[in-house]
Amino acid sequence: MTSDELLHIRLYNQLLTLHELKEPRKVVAHMGAMQSQALDMAKWAIGSRLQDHTVTDITNALNKAEVIRTHILRPTWHFVAADDLRWMYALSYPRLKPVYRSYAKMLGADETVLYRHIPLVEELLSGGRHLSKQEMGEALTRRGVLLDDNHLSLLLSFAELEGVIVNGELDGSRQTFTLLEEWVPRTTNLSREESLGRLAHKYFSSHGPATLQDFAWWSGLSVTECRQAMEMIRPEFTQEKINERECWMPDNLCTLPADNDSALLLAPFDEFVVSYKDRSDMLEQTHYGKVITKNGIFSPTIMLNGKIIGSWKKSMKKNMPQITLTFFGKVPKKTIHLFQPEIERLEKFYARE
Image 1 (cartoon, rainbow, N blue to C red):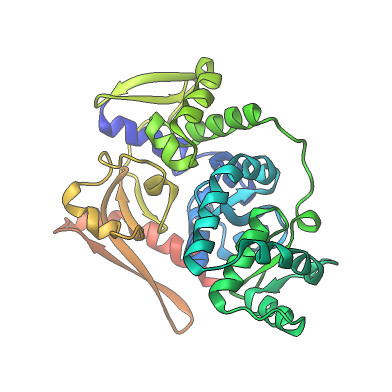
Image 2: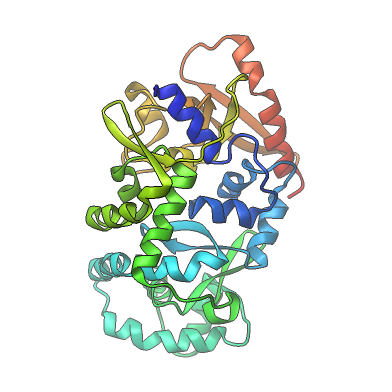
């Protein structure tokens, strides 16, 4: 298999070519978890995988608790389907807790004091309340708990870590917090072994062809746990050597012929870019710093047939979105024209916000 064939299969598995899913929650459930820094732009990561949806449709899925935005897997923002939240969070917890303890140590915070405040956080949100970070800080101050911005963020992080709170409804562009028990229905508990197998199945179904190292990077799990998970799903997946790497992918692939060029504008931190340890198939080393900064910030990308050839940005003019493309080098006009339908789709997505 060539790199071009690998990228074509990934485009199909990542729902960036034609598919039958119609709802944001189903897209997120298929993907397992979708990184979601910069919420406004992250909505396009879901929207780019759906036809004729707008940013309002993604907001509605969040406000109905069909899709949850929280810290999961690696300690960073992700979208996750409500049905997958609890088992995936239980799987992530042992890896997340040491990270949050490290944050507390850096800030000189007393972890025992933070835990004493969590019941108050629960009390303030009980009864279906959804409060922003600022509102939470003000409510805590009225109850005699004075915290600066960093320590307030840390308290909310620990409350989220312990499964007390989760992100709730959007208040305009502001994210709120609410109680997990009141916002997300309970689901059947899974054993850790069952959860490992399910996570591996989701990852390689939606992200394959991918390697053990890719899965370990994306999941935040140890290599040992990832190997264990992959052995559980081995009968349902094909293994193939691609550029000296053992790649796993579903054994029932039915991709569409690559007759037409795939011209896409992907969100920053899109799963197609962020979810692999090795990105050499899609991005030339000379352009790496133009897409991914040294501190791990991913730009919105221009992608042609699975390869990154530039970046784009969104600006607003008279309340209408405008998209500007910047290519890495000189590009033929016929190539630039390939992106016009995608520009129009992206502008339409944000126009009704």
